[in-house]
Image 1 (spheres, each protein chain N blue to C red):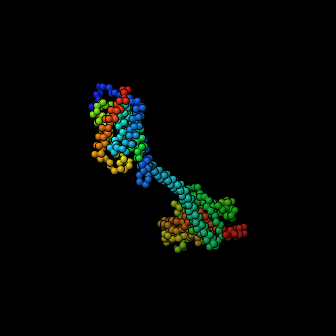
Image 2 (image 1 turned 135 degrees about the vertical axis):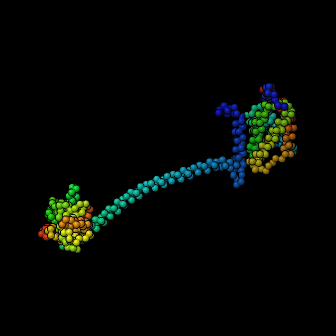
Image 3 (image 1 turned 90 degrees about the horizontal axis):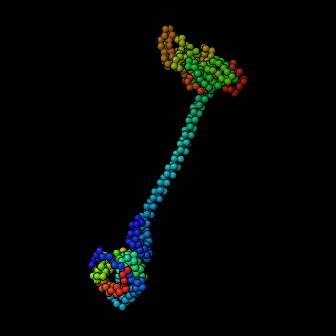
Length: 283
Length: 170
């Protein structure tokens, strides 16, 4: 390159001198609006670069603004997502509270309407064994509970207290095969004994084959077992069939025994009087 | 007319004082002679001096520098923009020095033709500059250009003969 420039030095010198004189001329010459020619040339020469630079700057600025907008949008999206999760959680909690409120209101109505004294209790746990249908409630002897007290809900009977501990009680559900409840068919007034059956169904025993029993008929407690007060809902007849002597009657319990949360324990009259003495505002 | 490639190109030197006097005289004559002689408006003494010394020195940088100096001084003495004659004479000085190696400069015919060509180039360059930069209307009048060429060729033959007396081989 240097050799090329050196060998053509006069030519490059000529170009330089000519350009210098052209610039000298352009400084002197003015065009319209008293604008010097060198300014016209400078503007013409620089304008494409300025336009390109301005375009590049505008594009860069726009890209930066877009990036910042996207970044803010992402931040906002994350914040809104968190708010949405919190709102959904709150809605779910409120919904559960509403359901619980409805359930407790039902229990309260039952307590107000019933002619017997009751103690409200929460279900703490269910029985761990496969063949035993029982639950544990959070009230025990401290609350005046004793064995064989009936446990009910607004929908119907649940079972009876099997064992009592100071702060808890073990409740045998009516779906357990070892349980027994004196029942009465609401329409035909036929009596029988309800025991636990298979697949969470119960079975009414000791009903003669010739007795008319229809599916869908309601069963209530008969009160003959000396445990459950008379007239409490037990369930509905799901299926009947002829046996050797007695009918085979399957019953759907009135209470969904697998979804128990709150129950009422019915106190015996003597116990109720004692409870009333110990805890006057228990009802 | 063209120089033989076998014969070495002869370069001449001129005393700087002669060069200075010739340049100064050409500028003075260019400034004052047209006042007394209307035909002198067609003459361009600085151009002829530039052509002569560029041809005999056969040096591009020298020819270009002399043309630039005389052109800018001519511009300075004239009422126009400084640079128009400078550009034209710079170009002529460079081209004359470049062409000098190819021609036998002792020949009157060669001198006449070269002078005519360079005067034409000078006129075209001036016209182009004035039209392009100053937005003058196209001033190229063939008759005027031909007159200018004839006058300057004739004047150049005389001036070259005078200046030949002061040159000596380098």
